[in-house]
Amino acid sequence: MIYWELFLAFFIPNIIGYGGGPAIIPLIEAEVVGHYGWLNAQEFAETLALGNALPSPIATKMAGQVGFEVAGVLGAMVAVFATAVPSLLLMLGALGLLYRHRESPRIKRMSQWVRPVIATMMGWLTLGFFLEGVESTGLIHTLVIGTAAAVALLHFRTHPAFVVLGALIYGGILLG
Figure 1 (cartoon, rainbow, N blue to C red):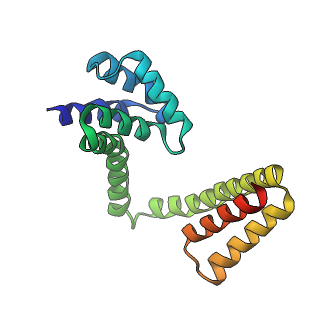
Figure 2 (figure 1 turned 180 degrees about the vertical axis):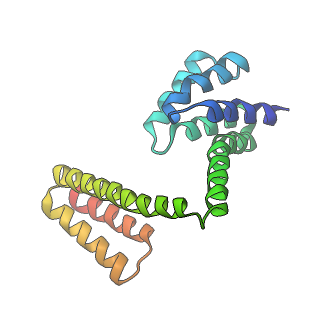
């Protein structure tokens, strides 16, 4: 029964919440503190603070922590799964709809317009990362890391995880 309650406690806020993790925190608090009483307000605030200190989406971190405290490892898995299921269902529904109408001229036009928008957004993101790198480490280090990453990825077909690891090592040695 506890696993079903954990599932509902995280599924409901994620299915009805709109605006991502920070927007659904009050809904999660209402379930975890108010409805089920698994944590008190202070414990919830500490869990939220810990979640905000770590990278990745806040809702999944909180689900994992609360699920673990309530029902161990399996509880953490159930709570994280319940957090991800709404997005998964929405994506499957959208993909099914797009696949069903893939021959539609409207869908084809839509995908033709979506690609340049995504490319533009990725370009802005890349520019932002570049400017942040220049500001925090300087132009030379940013160009060295960027050039080495591009060569490793494109010419040597190195796995991206090793490229990131190399950049971390470079930063740890020369910038640490």
